[in-house]
Amino acid sequence: MEGRKRRYVIYNGVAEPSKVPPEWHGWLHYTFNEPPTEAPLKRQDWETDHTPNMTGTVFAYRPKGSLREGGERRDADADYEAWDPNA
Image (cartoon, rainbow, N blue to C red; front, side):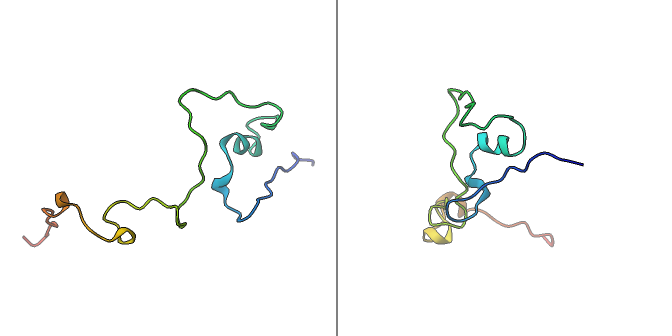
């Protein structure tokens, strides 16, 4: 029994799947027959450029108040009281 030819990625650097743009992801998973180099997808006005997942890198999002950003809580968080089931 013959199946489909395998499609795969050769990463330039660290093998991080979030680096694969949506159009190539679709081709890898047989959503599109032609690769984006031969049949590019039409971009919508509202679409933004693809960005890989930056979690775990120096470029990761760190909100104000996180330990990596100094750990200072906002004033609005100071009035928080945890729920006590014994109260």
